[in-house]
Length: 242
Image (cartoon, rainbow, N blue to C red; front, side, top):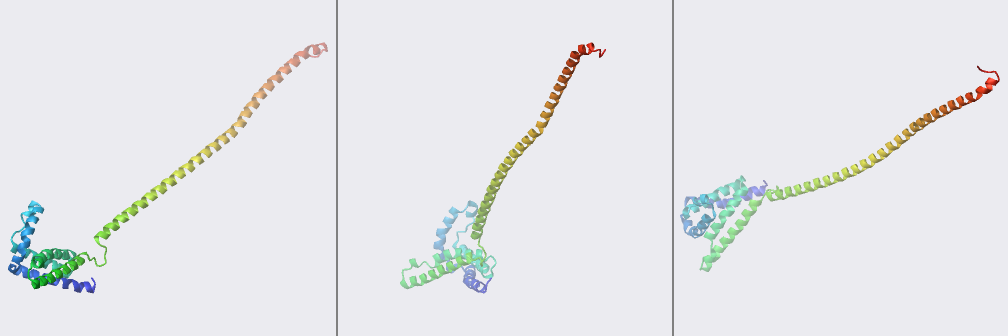
């Protein structure tokens, strides 16, 4: 808490604490002016509020003046001490509205001097109401609830965009890798087929060579036997052989 806030808050709350204590102790001087307001607000409040709450709303102007005084005392102490200051300022701002309308209705005055005096008090309360609103939204430099909510939503959207971009990038990389692997698999399969074909050629040549060798051997045997058979008569005439 800065020094300015430490001084300004009790100053702003002082008038509410004093008038609130006075209203609690002696509400009678305020009852006539408050009655015109309570006669209008109480039926409306009972009509809007849930039945369980509507039955507990008092109709006696004297009681309502004291309740308003108690709100001013509690809200003033909260604003002055800083404990629940924002809620205290908001409660004080809410209490100013009926008080201003009931006590300083300058438009109802017929005397010019009285109208001018009530108008000054009315505008003074309007100024105090504005100050209370500023105190209610004062976060002392810290992020407010609205900013944190919007920042959290923006952070969530940014994180979602990052995740989406990352997923798309990974999907593209996976697709590219799959295409490259498919190409490599095809090349590998072709290379294996070529190597298998080259390895199979010598085997076919060897089998053909053996087959040709067998055929040549058989032909040589056949020629040998034919030559021997043809030479037998010649050898017999020459007295060679058996």
